[in-house]
Length: 256
Image 1 (cartoon, rainbow, N blue to C red):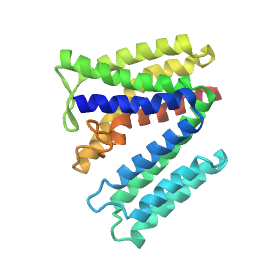
Image 2: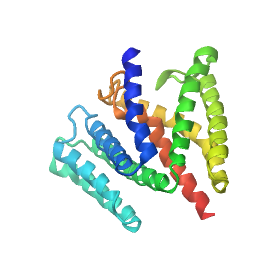
Image 3: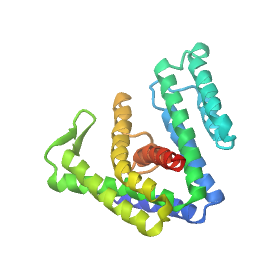
């Protein structure tokens, strides 16, 4: 527990200054998460992705962040074509791993571009997403511990309960909406309200989805970079889902 707490303080010491001061710090944070996250993805299988595939995947995703928005979609399609062809040129590259790399390539392109776009428009959007994600996580644990009786998804996460899930959703929805109401411009109130409702739901789905991936590959953690927590993906699984979901909500509301 002591190691876990110390690691959490170290994480906060890196993340909070980046969110407060932005600039090169926020860019470095995004690049770090993408590089380490994709490295953990490429190390999932027993045979592992060839090192060249890992380097290509990381470089391709990072390059997408500086592309013109009009080129991004066809570019991602082109990257997926290259990844899909990898098993033709390498016996080590399993077809199942190819599809996993394709999914995470598209996923991280969306996360990276969405994160930077939202942060550049209003940094408090990121604080809102973080709040909705981790308040839900904390209260789901507390409500499950004290009131949990009915299992939520035994085959993926035996300890999670329906009561914990509902409690996490309720407190996260209320607290994140109050934060948005008092600290974020009311011109974004509809997006904030929808985010308060849906982020606690999708954050929990993200947690379960990443747990399902780990069970599929028979591993406990995605990595060992964060003592007491596992890898980067173990710490930000729900957050990655919510960044994508809120980016969609925010973009859709702005089109109305």
